[in-house]
Length: 169
Image 1: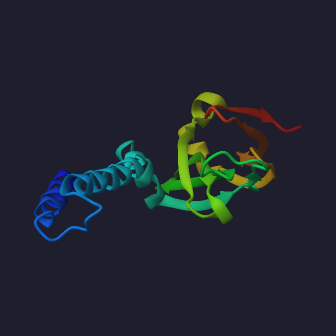
Image 2: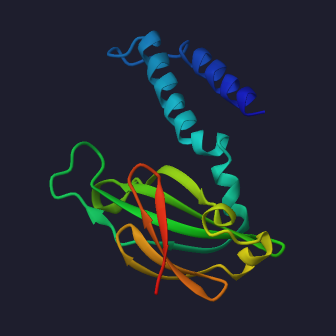
Image 3: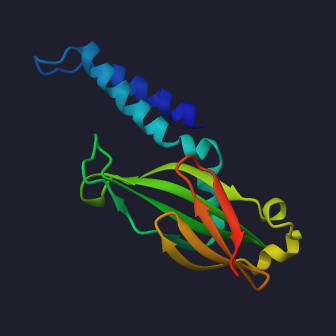
């Protein structure tokens, strides 16, 4: 279905070349610009291809850390932050985290990556115990406290998409 839409847009663009173009743009240059624009759209959908966007359908909680603004930004990225969201399906909860970038004045937000925290593996809990997952609070940029089965855990997030969990005493 999506391939059909993209092909339709490309065909429409090709027929648009028959109309009068500005003298600075040839039909081929115009077509190339449109292909670049479509590639940008396709790239922005890459998270959807990996299943990330569908996770938001079942979101029951979402929070974002403080933004880490870059004092000397390079390119379009002026700041980064982490987001944590919890999805719920029946009695099971899943906690995801993602790293997002910000452009000038906080606009042009993009998701760099999205990762799932595997409580069964990391904390050795039963699937039913995930129903007790609660976000407690941010400890700062890249660290937060969560509660699972009445026990508090600190989660440290790293720029490479990895994380560490330790029990809070």
